[in-house]
Length: 203
Picture 1 (cartoon, helix red, strand yellow):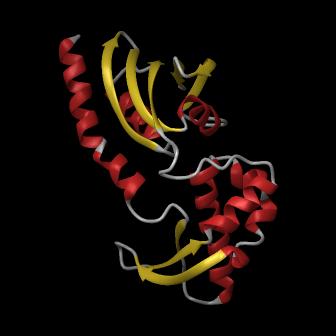
Picture 2 (cartoon, one colour):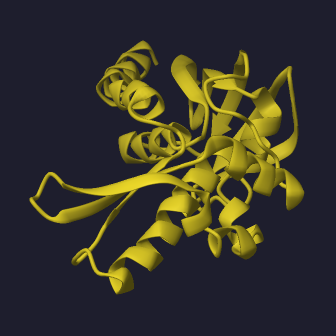
Picture 3 (tube, rainbow, N blue to C red):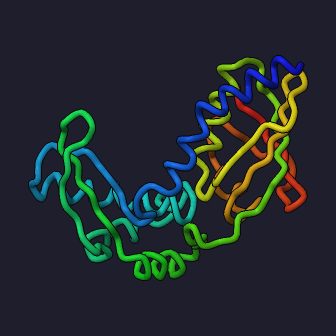
């Protein structure tokens, strides 16, 4: 069991630096989309996709699907945009949206606005079951890494297919519950609370 925990901790050590990068690198209201060229035909759908990235980040992964009218206003919500080369040399549109305007649109649509790097981070115990091997573990950690507002996670214990984790996340249990709605890898078991929550890795 200790060997398993050490192995999982090593895997986590290799993965977790990506958490810090994902949560602190760049502007939360910035979206990046690969495009074929700088034409309006390529730009307009890319702006909508970039805004969808922002909505998922600051309101939850289902926000864009629940507010097509906000995506339709992507151009009017822009602060600025430009083009860069991505790592493979392709063209990438980089769009930064007006924070107050986006937040107002979300509130007007009745969607949550978590804020970004503003809400206090909560230490949340998480019981995760269904982790049968290292591949499952990597899949679970990657799914957790994608949660908006996640600052850190650590493995506290491992037994059979169960892991006990400790997450530091802005918005706490309520934010995780919202973010996991429709998640293809993780399912919430029972009711989320500040005392902790239980997750199941889908198979």
